[in-house]
Length: 405
Image (cartoon, rainbow, N blue to C red; front, side, top):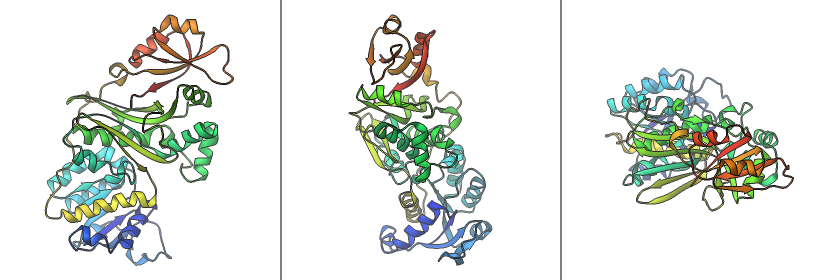
């Protein structure tokens, strides 16, 4: 069976490598048929690449080739990936992707188009790289009502926080090392401001609860305000700071979804996830907590998930997989600030007596070199709106959510 790859960057080249290096295994998974990479779309030239005869700069070479039944889209971004994918689906070709931005923004339209044309649109690699999460969420956990999801969904920020926690590095120092190692882009905004994690939250929420969630509906905060002082105070409470994407189910018509730094206590499975690794914890009403852990990015881990989707499409050439979600609405994702209750970490220029005058129950924290006019504490459970009402008039340095995962 002939397949095409659109985008020959890190992931796209990995897809070609995995298909070719596993030519002895893949036929066993799809009933004896083989996969053949027939075309590779990229605007760049690769004169020394062993696949140079397969390259094309014309999308129509893939679109009009009736022998190509499955296309792996690893281009990234919304355009032209969206236009190309729509045309491929309308032409009766299944498409698989690692493109989280496209799925988060346009997933509903693409899934509806795939359904209309009797083909598949699959995206296991769009969340968690090589970590299996899409299929377990939609198949293995299908008997559960999902009560909530919390995930470390970005390897770059997890690496930076690990360096701050374990090496005592500042945010800027840790970011520089992440860039030197190739974990962070020259412009790291999408990672450190939480936008990458936000897109993945949208996909997980849409799958778990059946209605499309857009990035604009997910309140997002990054890690740029986290300091070593915060790390030290939270260590005294036997916790660490992680950038988490969190989703909470209220009803079929109401969920909360947000991305932010969070205090995770050391007993949690999420607390031990270090460096560039990702982990996604799913809480089901029947199964309890299950955690999916592994490399959240990288050439071959991500490519393995893309090729798994290619294999799935090859097994379902005569029928569609029942897969996807329906339309959402503007009020579906509620404001977590007034609806989600949790404890909070607070650091402020204040005295202990000022704190106890405002909060009935607090746990005071300490750190080496703590100034006499600075306090840090963890509150009891409340909404964020209630927290800031209580903090009114206090010189607050930082606040961080405390998770119960």
